[in-house]
Length: 89
Image (cartoon, rainbow, N blue to C red; front, side, top):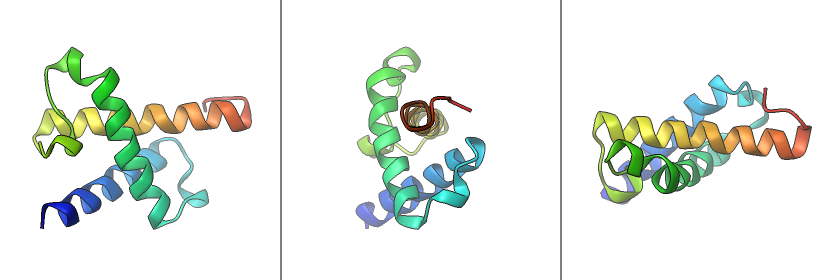
């Protein structure tokens, strides 16, 4: 059951990050899940130590952990946009 919740929350966070970064029209549901989960890993490496929290990958679904995972997804989309389009939007 935890795996399904992890996928759903990862998908929602990836979807919200794609709306913020204006890449939602280019992504489908699968890429939203991938962005949410990989963004949570990135947020866990970079942002979680600064905030003293976990991420959705740690099974922590608190407000701070969701925020860290969401910010990690935004950073991931900014890096992808920068590499492939030459600008972060």
